[in-house]
Length: 148
Image (cartoon, rainbow, N blue to C red; front, side):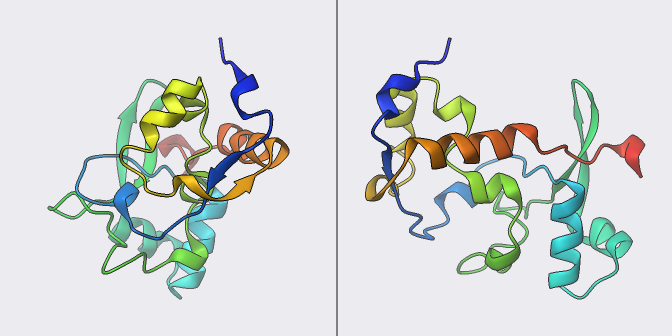
């Protein structure tokens, strides 16, 4: 069960654009249809070409999901001295670190600060804003291979 009381008065977080969350480790950035369209428009590419060049299908328990590719270094495909698509970044990236997995308890939140210098510092994000971001991340449908 999730204990939300630890962020009743908000939590400190400011993205430092350090890219720790997008570099040097395996992971998935799952895309919604809106994400894919927004990024392809930002890059001035047709959607199908964007998917072919920058995405991959990841097998998941509910089927194959659309995710951004990673470089051989395990950096996000769009990382080069910072995020190349920051203004058009996916919802998953926009809502970080306010994901259910990080908001399970005060302990999980504090453990996130070990790898993200923005967690626990900067401006206070209100409980309503935290829950709004978590809900956006939770409720955004991911593109499944059966959708295309």
